[in-house]
Structure formats: structure tokens, C-alpha cells
Image 1 (spheres, helix red, strand yellow):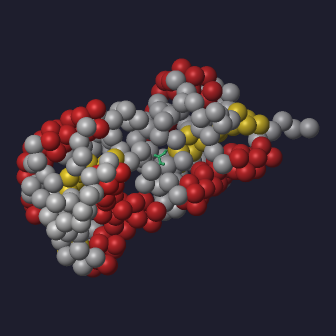
Image 2 (cartoon, rainbow, N blue to C red):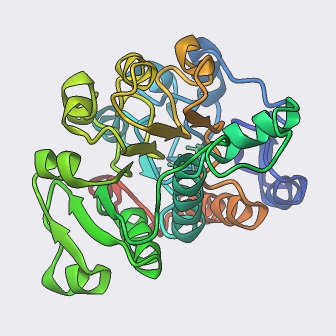
Image 3 (cartoon, rainbow, N blue to C red):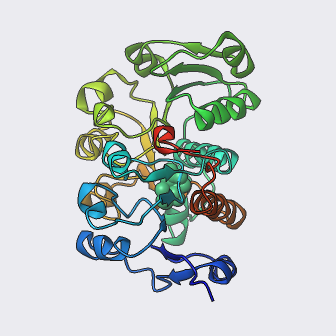
Length: 328
Ligand code: 8YV
């Protein structure tokens, strides 16, 4: 009998997806969902031909130093800032991600976080649970800021950014955006979005939403200086990546009322959260769940598995990032 190829599934996945993989592969799974240390990850990768990984696994030269049979690292994530692409390519390994399948779910969540932040939903719930709601009042209850007919400023206008723009149109919002590259005329028309400089966006938007990939150049895209440009009534929503915002500077700004509120799904150094943020009522906090519906997480796993199977079969994975590594 021919031995099944050995693969690693670095984090817990849906049991049925795991069982299906076990039909074709010898699987080293991690249903306990304990995050590997860099040393453990290196050991795990040393004996496999493919690996399903997530943002918690940093794939770099160190992780790959003993991975002599590895053909693919398949991220269960669209963002791949956990990948050192030059190092992965230098090791002759294919790298893939999971675009498209999470676009709508993530854009939905971005909008939900914007709504919750502008309308002080979590703060109001805490207020109610604490017994502070003793009478209905016009003014003596949490007063929010409007979403409908306001201006949304989207920084990062990829698939998810455009998804948010389309949702914003339903709320009668004016859409302005800033992106590394300007959209085509057709895409700008579809989103009814106007390209502006980052500075103009920050100073004119009522709601600023961040949807750009993390790269070293994008580190602290929003810091104290940028927050200074924003309106005191504005909100800031981060569904991009921790490190895009200087969380310390943001906490300071929220504390001093420089901006109205923030909604954060991602954090610098997550799962740790800046303790100052935990103390503030004008910030809505979520544990990196923008793509987290069962249907979407299943679709992400399925696409990552499709990528993995293709690479192991010598075919081109559907969402290959480093095409230069693939040889027919
Ligand atoms: C993932 C995400 O759940 O796809 C992304 O880029 O941020 C989330 O959808 C997370 O990164 C887990 O790997």
C-alpha cells in the first residue's frame, strides 16, 4: 500500500473537514487548538508535504529551515501578513490564501461594527444591565452619531472595502476612499466612491473605516497625528489588522474626546488588548471575528483544502500568492 502524504493542520478545524482530509492524508491535527511556538512549528513542518495554517502561525525562514518536503502553506485567511513571502518562495514552497469567500461576511461585520460604534450599542447594553435605565429620556441616555447620510471614508479599497462602499450607498452615505492605487473608473462608478488624499479623508469623513492589508509600510497608518486631523464627532473602525492603528495613541484620543468613538476587531499584539482600551466606554471591542460565521469559516477551510490538494497533486492552487514558485 502506498503511504498517504503527510500534512499538518496547525489549528482546530471543523471535524467533518478533518475527517475528509484523513481519507487522503496522514494528518497531524491540532484539535486542542493550542498555538505552536515557533520552535514547535518548525518541527511540525519538517515532516509534512503541506500545511493548513492561520494568522497565528508565522511562516518564515526559521519555520521552513527543516521543511525539506513541504510544497504548500495554505493560509485559512485572506490576509497573509503571517507569511514572509520572499522566504517562502526562496524555499520553493507555494503560499495560498482564501480571498472572495469571506468578502461579504467581512464587509457585513465592518458595517455592524460601524453601526454599533456610532450608536453606542455595547455601551448602552452595559448601561441597561447595570440598572442605569430607570426612565426613558430625551437627553439622559447614550446619544450617538448618525450613520445614514453621513460621509464614510474607506482606507483600503480592495474587495472588502468595495463591499463596505456598496453597503454604505444603501444608507445614503457619501463615499470617499483612499487606496495605494486608484480604482478603475468603472469600479469607482459602481461604488459611487470619490478618491481623496489620506489627509482629506481623515478631515472630512464622519466615519473612517480601515480595510487595508498589513505591510511594514502600513504600520501605524493611523497614529496621533492622523487622529488629530479627524473630526471630534468622528468614529474610527479597524477591521484590517492590528498594527495599522497605534492603539496607545487611539486610547489616548478616545480618553480625551479627540474623536467620538472607535470600533476595533483587531489589535496590536492580539489576543492581548491594550489595557487602556479595556477601560474606555467609547470603544466597541471584538475578538477578530469579522469573517466568523459558520458558513464563511467552512468556506475558508474548504478553499484552503482545495489549495492544498492542488499543490500536492502538482496542480496550480486556485489562490496562489507566489506564482513564480509554480512549475507545470
Ligand atoms: C481570519 C482574517 O479569520 O482572513 C483574514 O485576513 O483576518 C480573518 O478572516 C484570521 O486571520 C484567521 O487566520
